[in-house]
Amino acid sequence: MSVVLDTNIVIYELAGRFVQPLPAGPYVVSIITEIELLSYQSLDESEEREIRSFLDGVAVIGLTPEIRAETITLRRLQRLKLPDAIVAATSISLGIELLTSDRRLARTPGLQCQVVSIRP
Image (cartoon, rainbow, N blue to C red):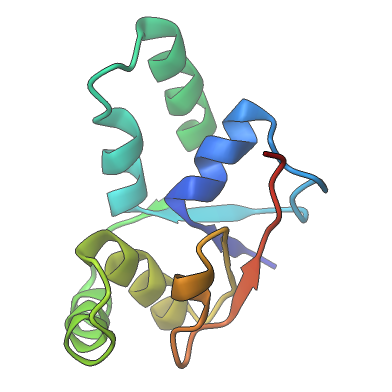
């Protein structure tokens, strides 16, 4: 079964910071995760290649009408930041679990979510 990865999970996976390995994929990320990962100003060529390689192995989900509508609802009712609302809406719209390290996001009503522990 697929799982949606929050941006922070991808960052920690690439950095090798998990206490336990991630559950088996396949993995899905939101288009906002791709944008966030590739838009860091301090990203060097090697890091960009590593991120692009990771993204080549997952499904990147765009902003469908359903995801857009759910994002708007989450922003209005839960006051989530736009990237968090898009990631949560992607998970809710697809009906699959989200992996995150963001405990606040994990409390979003209607979101199937697992909080993943990282090494300090």
